[in-house]
Image (cartoon, rainbow, N blue to C red; front, side, top):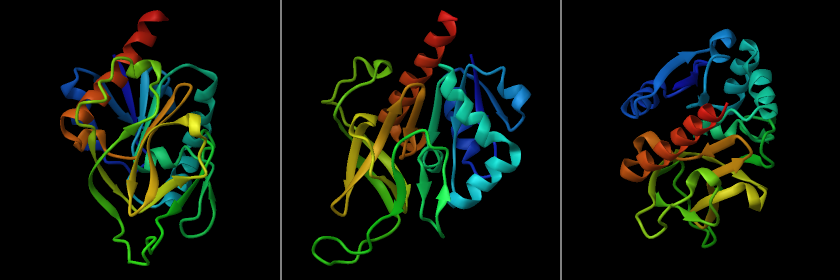
Length: 217
């Protein structure tokens, strides 16, 4: 099974690649659209600033390529900044349009909490996910197991659609969409490749979805 890790110069490529290799995937790190067309599924990683990332995607023609995936049923997983890029826009360093797959905006954490105490930004550390529903690929999830995952981010998705948010967390009293799903697009604000057993479980379930889709075509 071939997984294309979309390389636009701003991804945590090595750790994602290693996590996929441990799941016995064939991994191709590339920005070449001809090569991407041969993949069974995609991962859009990302570390850095939203405007820079969108600029890089646009320069490589990958922004339109990702949008066109909405017309297919090929799974794509956005991780951290990669998830944020799937939203409508971000106010990081001015307003920048995103890929517009999910409804919502990317905004910075509030500087003060409800008690007017300064919030430590970025949000960095382990937090549990609270699941509200399960997409088909997560069928069988035991919600009693530990759902702690590892976050590192200063911005979060807001004004989201409730039915698109599969699981969430909280930080400094703010609602944090952690796992989102719309059709063949999945987003994880946390880093599954750095999230221990539960992160591996989620990544494994997503990979199995890719395999199931491939076997049905």
